[in-house]
Length: 439
Image (cartoon, rainbow, N blue to C red):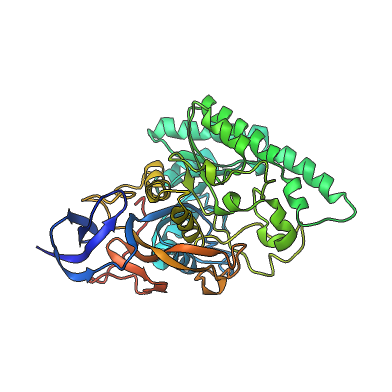
């Protein structure tokens, strides 16, 4: 049998020895120890390992309405260069992705521009509008708890329960957990000081705001029998609340909350401003908190350099992460701090299962040929000038790494090879390779 593409004599994560992977029509058709023939044959280099295509459950591609910061094309190129085959975009664009019309329009934008697979989260709206959005299969309904009152939170969670019950669905609620009252109270206090430093932003949105908000989210999830995903969990105490909860709840860590603490404000200023903010070293999560239960969400949130330079309170919160996180974590694999199998689980299998991405998250016959090839021996330093993202800055600038994604394969098509984006996202039949994952 002649396959469209064959990966010949490759090492596959969690499997011993070398294998051949035959790909036909965007699917993994055969995994074999014996030789396979293909029209296109890919042979790995030394130190290269095949992982299931990496999935980022938390990106902000700013499209539509804010495309001067990023758009689906530049954002998806950034994702591909970072080794990601699928991303899930957040709803806080202009207009907000919380109507059927806006959601449908964003699908069309992604289908036109994205070179990786993509899903979309929806914002909350009226019950009727959410029922209409449900027809388009959002990855979840996202709620920014720091923008809500106790009363409005209760109503939104109640509406989602009603929607799931009446439609026979099980949509997740994705939660940005910061308590509005605590944030407002502490921000007022910090602003009242005669002079502010960048680090004051972390005190304006303290760890307590996340911990209280997580508890409130868990109470509402239990009250309304919902499934939830906690975005960018940043505190050890917040994590403990999630782990002891009987609720059906998942959670993610970002690279900046893993690696950085609020002392970085002193050297990098508003460059590291983000929500939730970087935590005190005694409060924050870190590498030791990464287990088989978590996910990694980059919270890729690009802004212009000017927008990051407007002072403590007016600078925009957000960090560009898609092209940093895999080299950072592969470095930990080389150090022995993480296993490659664990990395594959938390960055592919877990998000695929949680967000119902069918036929993704594993290297298995019949599954989509979404594959990430990493070279565990390639070393260098992170250079934001080489980013495909429009945001060519990073708190991880000049950080050394050992290990890097060197090929990104989306539905059988090579999208990135050795840092070069193959911009023609079209297969041999003239059809687009990347897809909306919940269609």
